[in-house]
Image 1 (cartoon, rainbow, N blue to C red):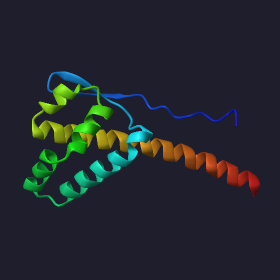
Image 2: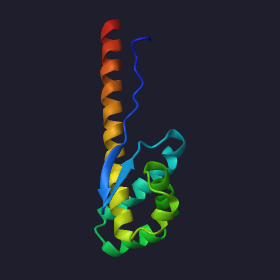
Image 3: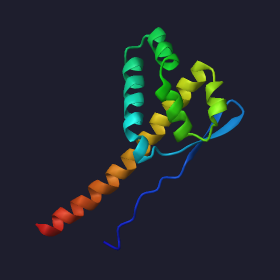
Length: 120
């Protein structure tokens, strides 16, 4: 057990206009809300209907909340973001957190493979 390391991903910095924004990994307490907001966004984008995308962004308070928890932007700045910028930033949050999840799953799978091969 002492050789196990807990994965703590480092925030990723992206540019939003002229401002650097840190995108942090989603916390477990926000994971359900993240899944709902990200799933809704992915399904709307999959429909490839621009009006549906903009309607989702305008009517999704979860989007604002998640941008507040997963980025370094203040609530004041988030409320004043143009819709297109908020959508692009949320897409980056989903992409980056997907990378964090992939990294964690690969690590877990390799450790589990080692455990099961030792038992065989």
